[in-house]
Every structure is written in structure tokens, then in C-alpha cells.
Amino acid sequence: MKKSQFLQDLKQRLISLLEDPVAANARNDRIRKGGNPLSDALSAFNASVSEEILNIDPASVPGDLSDEKIEAFKRRISFYMKENGSGCKEYDTYITILTTYLALVVQKPLHPSHVRRLEGNPPEDSDNRYYCGWKTRYIKERHSLCRCCNCLPWP
Image (tube, rainbow, N blue to C red; front, side, top):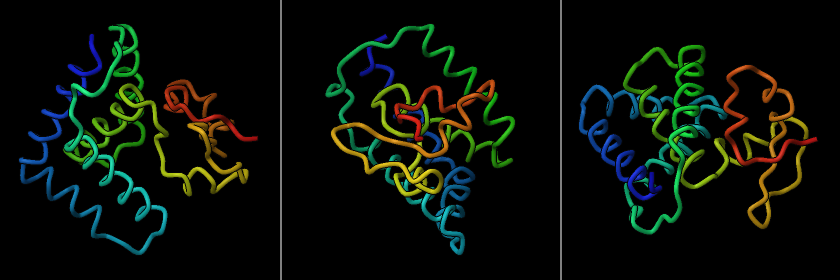
């Protein structure tokens, strides 16, 4: 499948989800909560990724994705959300869309840089090389999303 078509499908799912009042409220509640620096950082990151998806022209994204890669990621994210989801189906769908975009379409880190630096003190990101202090520990888990993230483990 062309990445551009895959992105168009993700974008349409995101638009439909954000038009749903329950999903929009769940997303906005997460953004408004405040008080916890980690949650605030993740909410801000998720909001920026959401805006990126809504504003990107799918035709500008080159490349292909194999059906096998898409299906493997769907299985992995489904398992991950069952184990670690928020309990709000709409919000978990929102996170699934964002994570799918980051992992499969643009191959960017699944977390903001300062969250990835909370452990292990990795070097600064540069030249499209991203580092994560958590990856070494969590990549060993059976359905770890770290296996789909383009960050390099540190140390």
C-alpha cells in the first residue's frame, strides 16, 4: 500500500474521531488535566502530532508499506492498548492513530525528546538520529512498541 493512501485513511479516521463529541471531550480532558509534568508533556506532544496529521498533504509522503508490516503493527498496538490503554475507547483510538502515523508513516519517535531522556541520559537528537533511555529496558517485552520506534537504545 502506498504510504500516501495509508496516511489519507489515518487522516480520515482522525477527522471522524475528532468530530465525535465523546472522543473530542476525552482528548480535551487529557490536555486540560495538568499538574503532572509527564502527562502534560505527552498531551502536548499528542496534540502536536494530531495537528501534523491534520495539516499534512498525504500526496507529499512517498513510499510503500507492506501489508505484513501494517498487520504486525496493528496486532502489536492492539495488545499494547489492551494492557496500557486509558480505559476510554475513543481516547485509545486517538492514541492508536497517532502512534501508527509516527511508527509507520513518518518513522519518528513515539515520545517527545525530554520524556525519552528521563532515564539513561541519552545524547541529544541530531541528524535524524533519535535516542531513548527506556528502549533498552522495554524492547524485550513481547508486544513492545519500542520495536516499532526508530529511536536508538541508550545506553
